[in-house]
Image (cartoon, rainbow, N blue to C red; front, side):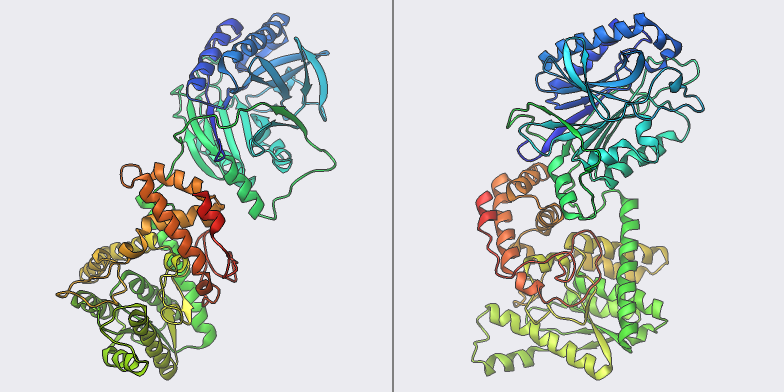
Length: 640
């Protein structure tokens, strides 16, 4: 809870239609089950105290009195589940009207009553035969022994956790053109819960899934949907218990149809708040209809320690192979379109890249090939230049040559050893001292060759540096840092390999086995700038040994820039995601190194060349990331 996580659950008790005593006992079992899992908010289905399918029995006084008594009993039972809030559906008889209501129960008390706003009265639904719509506004009523609020516009707010605020919808409320959740979210609700009794028909589950995930995305909210299940009458309908928990467009948990199982997940209300804060188009407040707030107690520092939520080690990379391939195809198309448009605008006759035989420059050449096809430019007008120096190995030089040959591009070799030696001598540097000057002299010489060659050939220099390198400043200022269009600037390192793999698979499908073999070997080559001398033909300088594993750096980068999480929370997520692979202290040290590099290297990002935005995280100084180059990192390091 300190980090903004709220454990929610959705479940359906196994009920008997119109048997309030039996249903109460089954609801208590669900409450106890959820409480044992350290749940803070349990959502049960619409009218589950009586059953949704009671029909004209709803007009019987015995049933509504039995439902009221059941709510009183459930409220008393909630003392045993402590601060967990239980949302339960029942029919409320009040002043000659009957309301389809949600009762919010906590620690022996009734927090409030929320009636259904929209009553379906079509096809198999006849709710207007029995129920009245929610009254406008909120009013204080007396129900059983409690004086409480009745109204659909209530926000339930934790006293000690500002971001734990939720509103209530009941079934049809979500399915209409203007759901109450819109106003509730604008009024500050980070979560919406829905007590539902929608029946199941073929195709409805998929539509329901899209509806819940879409509403959570549109409103930057968590959405907990509890659906009626086994025990409802099957006279004319079947109920599947299709529970859903969504957060900001992502389904975190989903019940299998007809399984009658509880689902749980940890919703991140701080993440939702950060999304709303960033998106200035999200409207807040409604002075014409301000929401009523009901505050409830919540002990600080409570809840579980382990998270129940999907947590990918590579948040930039889809885990499903089919989804990953589709995503990579889209990204490659975006990169190619951006490059083709820039080449067309500048009137460049050729596209030029420094090809090292590594992943990033390989991806840049593959994008150039796609851009050339879009421009109807012959592949021979693409120029790949390899510039071997002190750290270049035979393997990478061979792969660069083979890649250019198989791609159909022009290929040239410019050995820069003599030029670098001459430059080092000019500035009085000993070439046997393998320091930063030794490394950067090579990178700047390569950039000079590319820029001058581009001028002589009326070509456009295509940049190869990726998003992860920019985050860490792993590039030479005014060296490989510079280009005329940086196609990889929005692509994190953990995704680059999969983009190259996608082209490899396409080559195999086209029968281009030689090209596929080259791409496979490039993907298997250690990541290295190859600036330090090789040893017996092998790479001695490995990037991840100097700046840490990219899988960790990309993980840190995603949660820092995408959601603005504080360091201790990112560390906690990393500990859970990489359990069994990295020790907590190792992750802490890696995160400290990440922050120090990220802050100290902003000056390189402040003058980046143009490049296409690819995903939700980008570091362009003209786009999503604006940061002073001399900002201090003390607060972030202190948090760790």
